[in-house]
Image: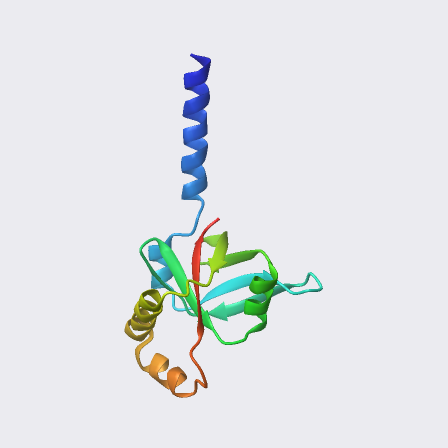
Length: 133
């Protein structure tokens, strides 16, 4: 009986932890979100970025930004959305199919502004896949 109660508690906690992650559909509805990292000196860096989401994950892009350097150095990462701040894990997928899909999603979501920004690129951006932590 105690084992069943413990199992029920663990399942409830696991569900609550999943529920506490970002709502990727809601993130997709926002034009701009903030990504939070920490610089080498420990100061929090808050950067406004574009985001797209699909398949239960968020995707962002950047070129040699300070916040990307922070992530590569091992900084914690969080997203600030309209409904709160959420810790996330960020990884570079290095998958051409995912990168192409992310690019297409950015074109669909941001339209003309995406085209303007792409015209000023000197190289392809780094794509980061975000998942709930």
